[in-house]
Image 1: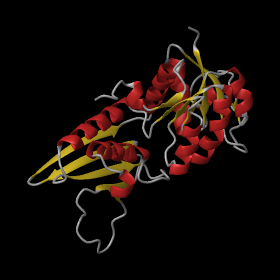
Image 2: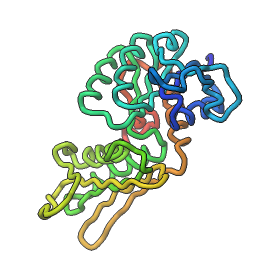
Image 3: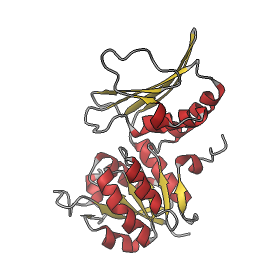
Image 4: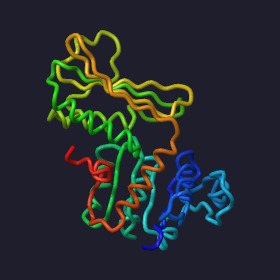
Length: 271
């Protein structure tokens, strides 16, 4: 099979540059386009040079329709508004759409899922292989322990991150809620401050920390009577997210239209 031709959305950002680097190192994948926001000062720049590689002749463009005429997939780690703008074009062109954007709302997810009757979408709040294995473990532990064990999710990221809690924290929260058979939105506790009263049994708590250059630390704590279980993942370099995203793209190529997650990519659906 020919190499999978991939577009990197947000190619001028930190994650976009990491994706460009990893594509250059991955057998079976090739960079077909580099997308940036209209008006960006990086438009026209060489994607390879921006990523710290030799020039590759792929210039940053704001025209996804043009770029997608010769591509098989798009790797999208941008912002919600940009991702939603990319959804229709990716579906129309028949691109595999890998969505790693965080901060997506319920309505954003509805738009993304609306195209999956005719397009392949793989979406995850975190593309790390380790984080998705952690989510599977969280679900299993939550299934095994009753509400006498309180669940708290603590995450820390660099000071420039603009959304909280992180997409990964929500991914882990959804896993815990699925294990307990509850609706996360109805049972989550966030932003505790002041005289809050006692913790409501069965809630899934979130705490967000921001500072420095932390790539991403996540812990899920099961706090029970006289004992505590803590499951933790620490990200050391965003390259691992890029590696997971490209693995997802190669896995999704040729799949039937539908909505998939990293659980499907890793074969953890029945874990």
